Structure formats: C-alpha cells, structure tokens
Length: 377
Image (cartoon, rainbow, N blue to C red; front, side, top):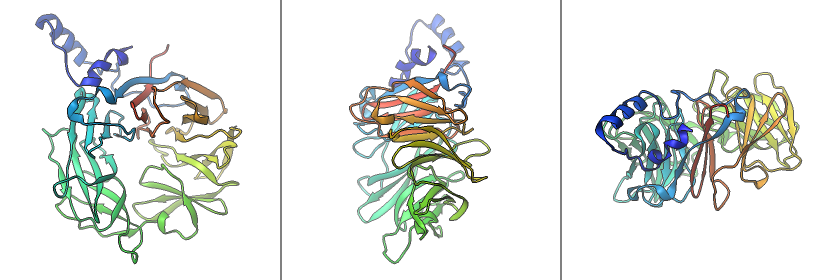
C-alpha cells in the first residue's frame, strides 16, 4: 500500500538520503506522482464506500519536539483534505502539510507577550493560511498563521469588537467571525474581517442566535451554514453571512444530531439526522421538504455524523460507543462496517469530512486517523 509505505515521511517530515545515482532516479520518479498514487482522491460516495479506509496517521507521540505537547484530538482540515492544524498545550498551532512532507511548523501569535486561549480556527480556501481566534482576558484577537512562511507572512488583528465563537474563511485574506457580545446590550453578531491591521467591519445580527422561535441550534454544522429547530419541529437552514433563513421544513421529531451534505453543486440541500432517543436515521431534502427514514437505530448513539456531497452515504463514527466507522446507504438503508480507527484512550474528540468530500479525519488523544477511498482490495 503506497499510503502506508510513506507513513514514515508523513510522521517525521524528513527525507531519507541514499546513494546519489539510484536514489535520485527513484526520487524523481516518485516526485512525478503523488504519494497516494492519485492527484485528487475520489469523492466518497455509494459507489466506493466499501473502499474507504485509513491511509495515513499522524501520531502525536511521533511529532518533533518543536511541535510541543499535543494531547487534544481537536484539529482543522483544509478544503482538499491535505493540510491539518493541531493545538498544543501552549495554544500553539501545529501545522501539517502532506504536500510539504508532513510537519511544517508550530506557530504562536499574540497581541502582547503571551498567546490567548484558542477558541476556533479554519484554513482559508486556498490552504495558504490557518485563521484562528483567541480570547485574552477581556480582549480577543484573530491571527493568520501562514502554512508556508517562505511564501506568506502572518498577521494579527487585535481588539475585536466582541468575544469570537467561530471563524471561517472568506475570500483571499478575509475571515468571517461569529461573536458573542461582551456588552449585555448587544446581540450575537457576525462580521467580515478584510485585510488590514485593525477591525473595521460592520456587524450584522447572527440569524440563528437571535431567532426567537428556535429552540436550539444543531451542533457541528460547518459555517457559513447553520441549522436550528423550534419546539414544534420546524428546522431552519441559515446563511450566517446574510443572517437569512434559506430553507425550512417540518419534522415529526426533534433532531438529536444532524449534518448537511458538504461540497458539490447541491451542498447544504440535504440534512441527515437522528432523533433524540436514537430510534432512527433520517434524510431531509430542504428543497422539497420531504423527509424519509433511512434505517432504524433502536436507541444506538451516533456521536459523530457526516453526509457525503452526493447525500448518498451517511458516515458515523463511534456508533453506540464502539471503536469503528459505520456507513449507511441513504437509498437502500444498507449498513457498512468499515473497520476500526486508531487506538485511543477515550472516545474521539472530533471527526470531520473535508469540504471536497474526499477525506474523513478522526482525532483523539493519540493522534489523527485519515481515511480516504483506496484501491480495490
């Protein structure tokens, strides 16, 4: 397996050197092809779900000393699933780039002598920066950490107008932020940070956080989308950047967990969800309002749930507290047991699907498991 054959390079970020002639030729041949044998991994879907498997691992204990001590399975993943950001105990951002051979750098930026407490972070759309927001006492700031310091310079914007809750990328050099107000007279808001040394953006009220009808907001929906539910079972899909409801539908039960589909032309159209008691898995089409059951769960918990870009596969991790990856075909209800993820001393801290739909990443206290569609076995 070429993925596993290259793990040592992924872990250390170092190249091995040998006899000049032969190894130079081998290096040139390998350089002509991506380490995983394909330029763009397949998008995960019903036609290839049985080939989804772990292809790379980042083990925290194997990181170089300059990375600091990483114990949390929190991470961010780039749009293409090739870059990762970790968080060490000193609130330093540990950057990993498969295209650069693995570990890149540990970046620490602050408004003052010490970095603040990390709140949230996200890669920009081009994978040039990791944008992070921090709390530092009563103040807060946003920092742009370059993935390749030789190509880009970092910057810090201090004195944000409120406490940041989330950050996600805008266009080049921009970042959207959702805020919780420091002043009780203000409301939760959203603003767009443009390139510059100071905050100069006007704030708009956060749609989901200021909706009097909504009972709760569904967790782990990636911005700029958000989903809320009323007590009567009306689910609303929001655009955080405009504060507007873009679709709504009525469900016969409240979702305990849910996720919209990512990537593709119909991103956000479909909503996979499990009712609170965990009795069944469902799929809602926001465009038509139609909701249908996929399969009974009989009370099983699904702590992490993702929906593929084509909305044809739902992926669950640690289902019913079992160490493994499960998938369901949304058309047939067929269940796939895809195998175990890495050994952890506790349940995963975070699971994410890359925006392009090719890479499933599982993070726990020992490291990251990176799953993609492999060759036929």
